[in-house]
Image (cartoon, rainbow, N blue to C red; front, side, top):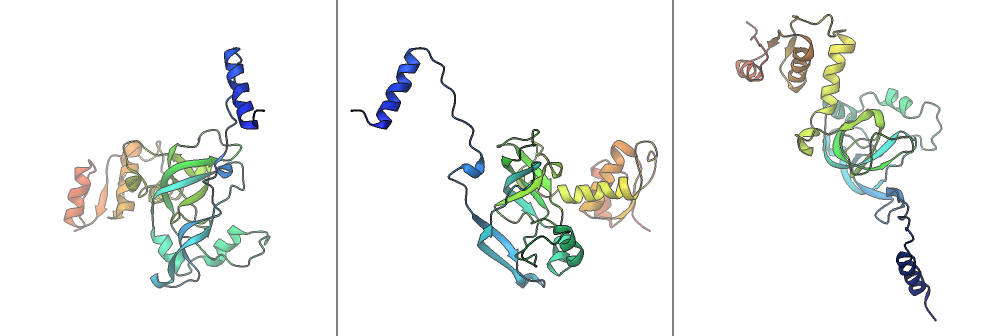
Length: 251
């Protein structure tokens, strides 16, 4: 008598000899994989304060896809922004909690443990049912809104409109330094400043030198304007001029 496993093997080999095309096994999502865990490593805070409130844990709850447009990203690199430092101290806590749970549906009346970090570069591990632009294995970068759990974890969940393909010319470490500050600069140019291709040509930009101002200058240079003024120190002026942006030191 054949065992169940042996019988299955004979059946498969017989079907192959008979020319019967075998269907591939169904795709198994990340959450159905044996690699799936209920917890993960993460840097969190349990209260607001200074740097001493940060702690490392291996028992942070694993992110879950709640909406069909979300993806789970395995974090290869993450970065902090000034807003993370402010949030660590309690900045915007009331407003952000209202955004996290506007209908007061959560059983827990606290945002803790809270993970900081707004930028991420990594690999898509799982996609919601309505996600068609990305697939597991894609290298992506993303900027996570401050009301969501941050990126200083092994995995993070993000909406599809918060994610884009990582430029192939950038490493994960390089890519993780750009999304949030880049979108902040774009928001300043386009939404706050109201600048666009039709009204920005030839205008100058006044800003204090920082990574934000460098991205701001690049955005206003291409595709918008071609003139810039930076209130800065000589070394910063030289750096910007090397990127092809006309810069001037404040007198």
